[in-house]
Length: 596
Image 1 (tube, helix red, strand yellow):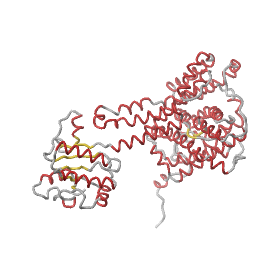
Image 2: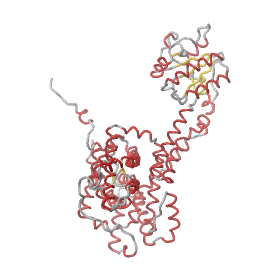
Image 3: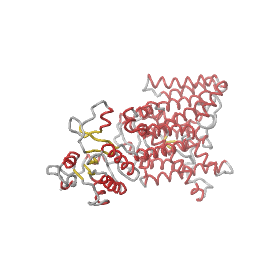
Image 4: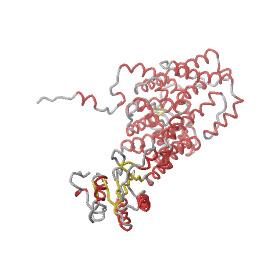
């Protein structure tokens, strides 16, 4: 039989490298090239600025940009994420290196490169070990709050350059106060240039979306400096940039012990960088309708940082601001990043004098315009509005847990800084999750007019009648898995309901119990005996899959409450005459009632 290859199988096989280019269309090329040009126009001056934040020569930022763009495109999963030096990780890098108290500038540069290398190795190890699932513990609300806080931090960090005032130190609010106190010293020409550049970018984005507004404004800003000599009138410009390509290899003067000492601090740098990259990647993936692979993102970040470190660069991560520029300029794939990398190489070789004349106010305007749309107040409001009066009546404070987690992450970033803010959001999110899981909603069920068993409280809250109960029978449903953290709470809730209603039979509907652990299984056996002592019988309905297996394995048939395939069958058995009523199991349920 002749061998044949299925075209469908061949075309859908995932790429190992440059996965984001799979299925590339020629019609995307123009948009990607324009986006690459726009990203390049922002990437070059930003990289110079962020290198300064890291405490090294501005050109180190350009050294880092080229390999990180290429290697992320090869190993990452996003079609839009732009990887390069960023303010948060640059500041963390500076604080990590400063802790080693290097004796000279050369040592400082070498340690900065070493931080990038160690961060890259940690990312690669995490990606190979498929630890991307840990990103699931950073909930979407926490990530949203983190992004909003980080975007506000980026904006407030750019305002001094926009107005020509001194930049303050400290958290967001301290920087904001410093700006307000310095407004009287603002440089008029810088204000006109900065605010005008910001207005121009926003107007072009709103009314001429196909025009690369950032690129136009950068070009105009450079032209004004060259033609009018604005730098002579006090307008700050980027200034001298060293030309040429970097030396390749490991940094000199860094021994093995230093690399191992950097593992702990670099893990914090990795966490912040990965969180920002993942947030930016997911934001644009959801807009364009594709998925992000967290493990590939770790591999992409790892390869980018290793490449940066081996090219005398600094730590890099996915950039919120430059990804916003990339997406806003019409990018459809990582070809835009490759175009930006190629142009950055040309910049290092030939074009550094051009960007030396870029006004810092214009650069600040481009960055602010890029990230301002990520200050997603509507998303935070939506989280707040999820707590309707009805949901608060049913679930109490748990109805607004997601909002508080998002707010904690945002305020944490604004007050405590990037890494502590993210950690605060994650920790609070986990505590709120445990709190929610430990106090599940135990619903009392009644029959609706259509014969369906529904939550009586929800029915009343929606203005409907209270449904129909069955005399002498209490039907309850636990809307959660049953495990050690909530077993006692559920037991106490059922006992309170029994004390109020005094039923002869309690039917526990397990349809919404996706899992159960040994402690919860023991609790059901204990609850059965509790109810026996007050003259009530406990029966189960609709235990399925893992729940059935754990209950029968952990408790045993003698202690396990009688089990039926559905609530109606359980209620019918409870109402049956004779001492054996409600003492069956799913296996001996009445004929015609299928076991679940």
